[in-house]
Image (tube, rainbow, N blue to C red; front, side):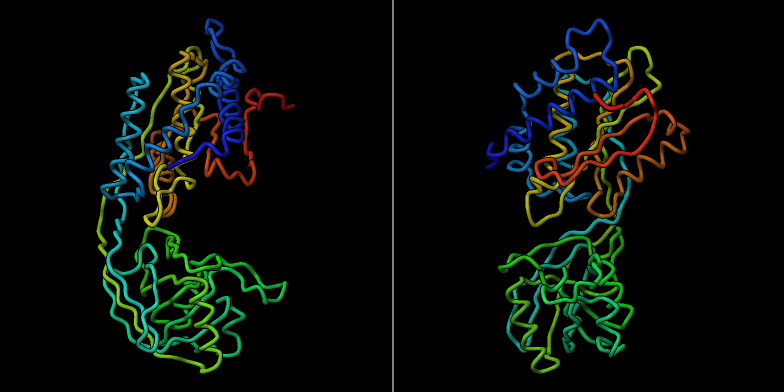
Length: 371
């Protein structure tokens, strides 16, 4: 159940988005709602939490190119139609689909709870020694280049607390590439978050099945295993995985609000709708996607008639490597319409903002109050 605990922060964000887009779009003089009025109205009657609660409770995890992913696409499409948008369409694209199956990880005969990373192979039955390689950076292989050759590498997903301050941060796919490059036949990551919570993510950084089985184990189990390996050097381990891998279709969802005076100039408000499969994706990125949906609702309910065209775009395939975004941009470039996009606001994890990044652009499209 989604609670309203952080409502003040989210209301401010809704206010900012609604007012910003209305200002950028230059609402037509005949509109009964000014930018600030629209922002305040959006804050007062916001449906974002209700939409987020419905999305996460009714559909839940929504990986791209899966049944749940398709349900989420239809959910947004139908909501936009209900809000009164006439121009709503799907933007389908093909991608590698991956569905979690079974996994069994053992060390010296004892089972350790684990989760497969997305895009690990369909099937794996690996039996080999497991060795510990710290943070899994290049420095961890410097003294023994072949340390993990034909073995299973145990790698800390983040940076170990006792690491030197100069230790570089590497994303997991770079650590995975290093391990495979040094000959590892399998990789087990340790979740850096205390406890034994299992997490997942894209193993390879793009929608491609990696060459070896990749799993994650809990922080506490992982640190105990590290201690054992530091005392004994190597232990016997097995990794058995069965997943479903194939080719599937995902669909971006696009709603267009035509401009009244400059319809060929487009403002885009976007967010990725998809999530991974071990949680409901309420923060990443149900919050951002439902924020976009709620702003779209506010524009429809308050009958905003912007000078420029506004597109509300819900991307799929983000977790697998920004696939929906790349599809959208490539098609715009092929159609020679990319130059019509004057401004884009992307929202990701709106309830947990880390910063605001600005790029661009056109001098008459400055943010409200900026110079």
